[in-house]
Image (cartoon, rainbow, N blue to C red; front, side):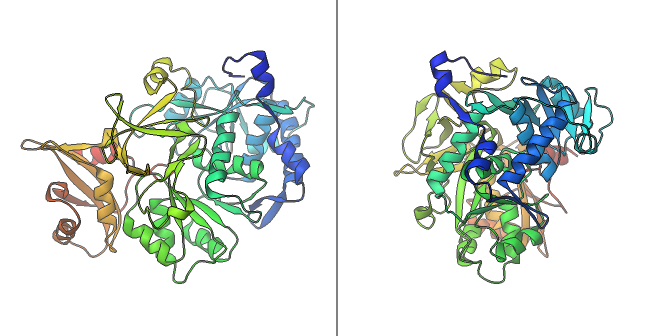
Length: 490
């Protein structure tokens, strides 16, 4: 297993009973997963995982191996993820939207021994095990991992790769555990909680829900992908109390809402970047408490989240650090004052120890235990975080800093603009100027310009508006700006 060096005494102190096995012992009859009108208890899930372990063992997968997983949300994917943990195997969770070349690059970069996949993928050199093969195959006995060492790496998740080659983020059992505990201490944990899971489980946001389920003893209502009507129906039927969303998916859900949401629905956890204030206000009007959150793959999901009592007072803020975590704003290595913009740096037990096989990148990103996120934000005088944008996306026009996310939020506050993406374009006079790509209904460019002038300083108003039928987004619905630069070049 990949493991950080610790003394023997510390090693003894840092183990926990196998999470799912322990959950099946503590609350065997609770529902763990609702999937396609079937409910699976923790006891049944544990038994099915044990069987999956015996099936996968026949393919010579052993403790300490690294195995890639290319699967969509399904019961089979959940069984494989838990089975690999039972076996002491590191899982490399692959984005199912990757091209063949990208899959090849990641499995080779991670030194994966085998690939478990829904269906066979042509052009991949390492051995493949399809769902049909292992689920119907023979079984062999194996000694299960009855305890998890919190410093052992359990997953390698590649950064989304919106620019350049992605890096493999090593996340330990301890990272995932402290992420779940930090979230519970902030949002609270109710006995009847049920989380709607529509994010892909190869993404840290989706994977974290699977870990929360077994740590909390909480049901997750799993969807294969985000289907706005199906998600909305589950929310309105009172089947779930929480959901994780990004701005685009939340906007689609709220557009459908023609009545208040059930009082049993506690909150929508909103991540993936800043959201328009108008959207959050509309959600509140329809009975949806929106808790903005800030996190990344390197922090095993959330690291800062707005607490429930501040949902009205601090609209637009991503809150304060989760209980075990720390957060600062730095510029040139020095902490800045309240309201001063700088890079967000974070620290905590849910923060990765580094990138797989990327020593220099790790040293550059993690310094003295602090992770330099590459994101720009500020703290107000009470310590609440406001995220502005990615540092690499910053547009500098005539010496002024312009954050694309702010312009996108202004554009999407218009009821006839469904989506927007903003990038910087080179300009002889100003250095850079913002340009916007929008999905709009029944609007002219002039009408959009006029609207922007009511919302933004003149230097922030896009100099060009490009109409499009879709915007490039990755599997977690984040905007892929590099594609917009390609469009601009074309």
